[in-house]
Image (cartoon, rainbow, N blue to C red; front, side, top):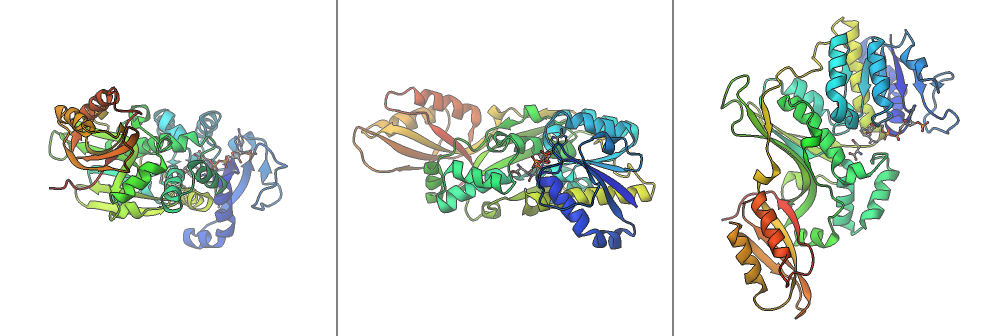
Length: 444
Ligand code: NDP
Ligand code: HSE
């Protein structure tokens, strides 16, 4: 028997407990031994929970979990940096293996935690930290271990995807869709993390760490969220044949392995999170609601795609339990540390500056409806080597501001920013220009 103690009994804690209790027999059959839920530490023992647990399991004493010599695995599902970090470090120093869903903590203090675990011969499971029920951590660490990873990208925040889907398909207002996502347990305790792209950046940091050996570069990830996306832009995107999705992208660019250099040959990696317009007929455009999808491109496998529920109690609980089971197996076989916590191939990695990223762009100018305006704007774009692919102007309101929508061919981000700054100073431009990066094939 392997004993588990859980700290936190909210959305993820409840899903985990529901699975551990409800699928106890299945887990026992598959493992050949029992996983026993010994303790759950909470703040408020009187709170009514929607999952019933056996008498004596709930406690408000964290040390009843961290210091119990019978507990083999501690699950941290409270979230946040402190006290979660202290609990995890104490569990490690008490010789207990750890499972956590806390991507914010790993993206901030992952190096310290992983080093402490490695030094103590402790396993850290963090499958639940990225993409909910999709076993993407296992995919990169185990399934694709033979590959050099060329790119990892996709939709990795369920809340933002839920909001964008509701705005696109049902014209639901941003704030209403966010409230629904919170009600379903998809959102973080502080939903700013979801809608400002920070949660995606946390997850991307973890994926980049596993893929490229970059020591958790969360603060260096260019991050833009969906809070400024308006239904007007969603409608224009749709008219042009696109959907707006919050993408997280990690991409090795030349010089990149296996083509250049050796162990320390140097890799340049693009790391960015931002709303992106994607052609409607692309698979990733069809990933809707709380679902996530992650592409991983290996040098041997080529492109592979993983799809599933990215948030919520049961999908995330499934990921937590899969870590518990993996660690339990390793304990029983005396094989803890079978898959090292630390990525050993930390290389000389340069993170590409967002200014140097090349993309196609959507611009929505708010320009006066009068002759010569388009030529002024296109003149400035031309001066910065930005070439126009298509233009639409909606409505005729002579002398008033109307939306002027432009799609560009590939351009450099730095040029785009300079051009927009200049355009926004034109007396015929009445509001700040909106721009969204566009993915897809260049036409022509
Ligand atoms: P919730 O807010 O639903 O639950 C948090 C739980 O932690 C509550 O039960 C709370 O206790 C307990 N708690 C908070 N602080 C303490 C403390 N100091 N001591 C003891 N218990 C404490 O959060 P979620 O379950 O949504 O998220 C938990 C973690 O999982 C976070 O790191 C989150 O980022 C991550 N995650 C969440 C997903 C989701 O879909 N929600 C998906 C993937 C990861 P009490 O009930 O008494 O208030
Ligand atoms: N708040 C997160 C999301 C939970 O919406 O994706 C899953 O990590």
